[in-house]
Image 1 (cartoon, rainbow, N blue to C red):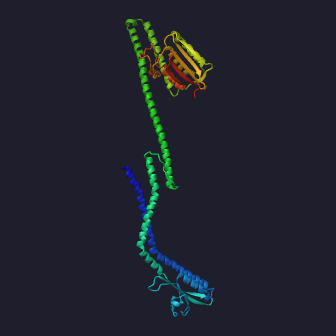
Image 2: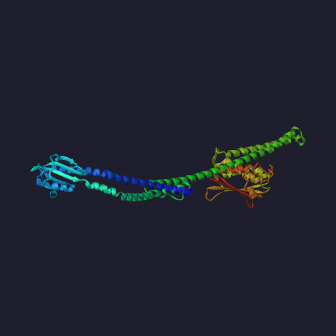
Image 3: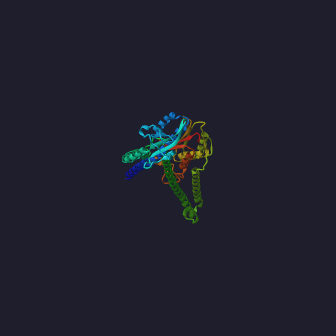
Length: 483
């Protein structure tokens, strides 16, 4: 239905242009006809009168220097050119010469009152010109009499009136035909442009509007094509921006959800030791059963407080890493010396579980990074490998530089332990523990590997964890410098 209405509206333009053009052409034709019918006789009469008078003046002016016989050619030329009756008469009124003398009586006379310069209108004949003027020759003076009729132009007007029906038919046919062709010629590219513009309005940019002309229609089609390109590009940009906005909103929602989950877990992590401490203190206050041994439970409370203090420190460290204002302190780090210091600090924990730390580190390996953050991450990785390995196992630490000399790879492998794939997918989430009992004697705070992930993202370090035949492998790729 909408397409039908659009088609009718498009055709209406053609009909309007056709009707207006037809009326204009017919009006012009009628105007020209009326002008010819009413004004042509008067204009012709005035023009003919001026022409006759000008010719008489030229004959009078030239005859002063000519004899009567020598002036005869001028008189004949004037009579033939203006289709006029011309003759000369003397003072007595006798005709002495006329090109049409054979058609006139020899005793024809004009009254003396008619011998003057001007136009006379004989009664009953308003369509004629008559003049009698004195003319001077070298051999005498005579009177020049001129008479001309305007009857042919009047007859032409009458014939024009009789020819009116035929002229009307011709004018109407030519006018309507011309208007139709003209309207089709003008509106065809216009309708084509309208169809193209409608497709653009429907967001269909598959076709371009091609009007091969250098007029306003050609400029309009070029402008619409440019608008189509700009609109298409703008829509693509809006789609990208909309997609990015949706992605950012989803990320923000995900971050907000994780933040809420994180605070809920933090509240739970703090609630349990606080409840335990409260029970210890109340038991000591009221001397209930075993709580009478205050020294023992004060030590336990102190241990709980230290654990909570460590948890708060890790939360603060993690919060700093998540802030956009956090700035890295970059410096050159010798990884051989760097790793020796870390394993030395963790040697006590390894000796308690009789775990052997085996290092395979290439010499002179250096990177340009944040020493403190990298130390925190590597220490957490190695400490986890020690704490989650059974007694008597081994922890391998390998550092090698790749062949392209762009990265350094670090492998930390702890033997005698396996991690399920489903646990590996969540192991870098905050407060996630493989040991579901959440016993602090078998696991830490649950933030160690999450902090490792945050540090590696800040330092542009890639990492992965997977189970191998030997045990669990933690693979780290460290860039030589941060871009």
